[in-house]
Image (cartoon, rainbow, N blue to C red; front, side):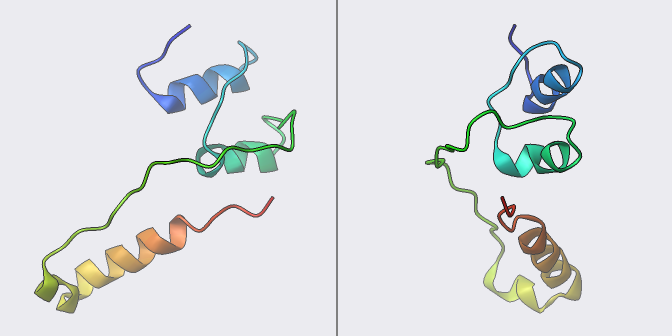
Length: 80
């Protein structure tokens, strides 16, 4: 099976339709709630990077700073 979205693939695995290779950050809640299980302790590091980009002066705006701070707090690595 193939999916257009990682979330659809994860949900399919949660529903018992198969297995999925997923990013820890995207499946952490499902692992914590035992909706999914990690069959192996080994994890691969991703070569991908993501960036928060804004104009230099934009950080002075409270809404930009709040969004940046919230985003960074949400992407902290899951504790395994």
